[in-house]
Image: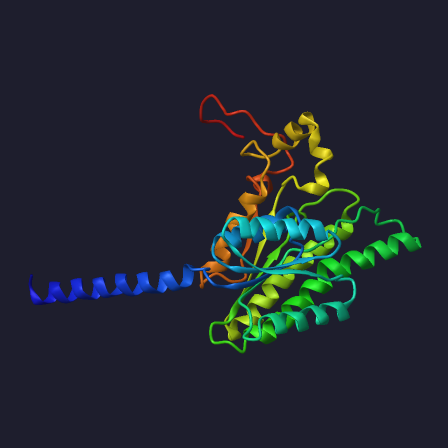
Length: 296
């Protein structure tokens, strides 16, 4: 091998080996300390279980469903994963969130690596209703779905930026942030806020080596929608609206989170995990043309 060719080969080999070493560090979740909010069921539980399988030490947050949180913990442990425990917190009051982080500081005095903002509520109300009940529902939705993740992320940042390795904040939003339905306006507004918050935090937190991304699931049956999807015709009706022809699972969402958590050059990303639902317009699906040509 000529001298010039050898130098090119040596440089190429060095770059490959260097990238391999870097990728191994960037893509490993083993040993990472993770707080998952709203992990007593549904997508939050699915993410907690997946991170447990990836070798993370997971702290499970819940609001009401203590039994569900305990089941998540038990399933993580049964799969050989590590669970730091379960903790209760009502996100409607900011003081409770500060109390939660005091507990986190006691549990992990050296800090933690990942915050998964998953907890949220769905409130059905007509935006034209301005009675006391409607206003209370609106404010509670914003408190839990928008103000809480902003404060959680703020408190997480102040801990993560003290560490050279930084950290990751993952927002679990919804396709309702872009397209929604009647009578879930408060929920849709809060989720649109999540997307904007994701981008804003990604820009400002980057200087501290803290990445912020969002995952936006489509139609994924969970415990609270079990009754609606118990009817096979309803399942089929929703599946017909999805290009891939099937509903999603919590596992689909949990596995899609992994690149956003592990790839250290992804921040400010908002990923739709919806079977192609958001790619389709409101027009009904068209049959495949028999031949090309003509004007559509």
